[in-house]
Length: 278
Image 1 (cartoon, helix red, strand yellow):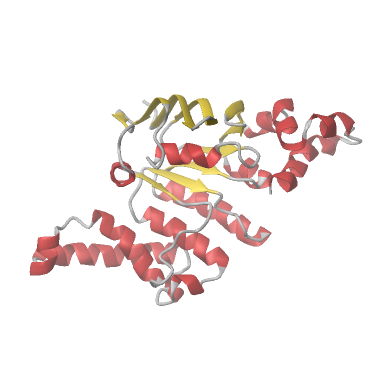
Image 2: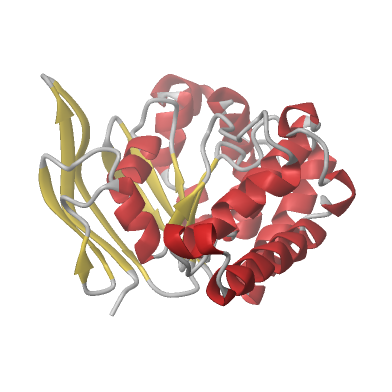
């Protein structure tokens, strides 16, 4: 059974159709990318999965559990975590407390146990402390643990957001443009980090990204959206050469007027698409 299934999903806002007839099946430990031009409906898909939006029609299942009608915190407890296109840290808390806040999501003790200082509370707090420091070490943030999140460099804020998502102990991690605003060196580090955490934590990852070079290097499969509809899906090298994908990014006229003058030019359309998409 797939870990995540979306069947014929669509959502409308008034007279606007944001996503139409979307199908998705993701197996455990897969890494699948959703790409497409700005406004294609990519983040809307994440919002449907996490309960921020409810589908106008269609079904969503996480394992055998239907997600329709559940609130975001209920979906998170089932094992789905996400990051956001625009970083949403608790900026007035320290780096350590950002991660501990997410660890507390599965602390295993009640408010009453906390008030009484019971053994269950003590054990839970010890687990939160150990888990937070494990993740901070993993993401190279241990030395900044007492810094306020808002004072971190942009790349470190991105890493902290991923660490905080992992602190909820998800089975499925949704990454919305994890390399946005990063330089090439930082992006290469994220490629290695994603591969490492997927293996280390046996995660399934669904990601949105505009950087074509990044998704070609890291994703096993790709789904391409344009105007809320799926126009292509398959292996990265197959999607890269799909005429519909090239047209969606660059336009039919640009493609018609571009004539490759070498064997290497076959990769150029999607390289240019990266510039357009950003």
